[in-house]
Length: 249
Image 1 (cartoon, rainbow, N blue to C red):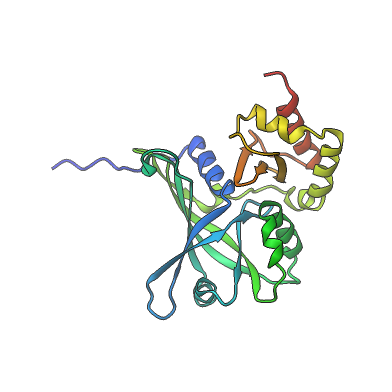
Image 2 (image 1 turned 180 degrees about the vertical axis):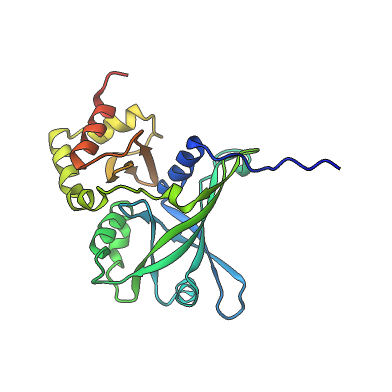
């Protein structure tokens, strides 16, 4: 009897890029944890953002079932990827297995994560500082990408992380760099939206930058753009953004 061909394709750069975009463009995700009392998987929906290194971040209440589960066992799984019209299984989705770490107030990353989270989820300002809420970073360990029918791949956690020595420096200057860019070019986000052919919506704005790319948002729509190579500093990122927005098609 002949061996059946493996349904898993060889992971290439296109697959890695698709996986990164599916993870970094998600505003929410399905989170699965292990129930500490029964051991059964427990799934719920969470809001999602990313830290400067591309690691996904969630904000949760300490009173929730999934937070209690994560305190008992730090293993978790995220499902990202939005279906469109027609068969939902024809659209890409990514399952990312993670080990979580809490980011309490006073943690070195807390203010940075808080700022980046609010850039995506401005309504979270109503409860983000409640004492029973905290952030978790979900460090990817491995992932399974389904890019549509017949396009299955396995990825390592490092495929999803921005491994750049410039991460911290860019994080420290990101807000000022974007503000300066918008002051010089007030229409930059709208120009990006036009060039990248995003869905028609209200006004767009840049809601995050990192060495690997940038995010623009309008209402419920968020678009992630990945650079071809990692940027070396915030000025480099803004230069890349300007070239995309204003270069001749």
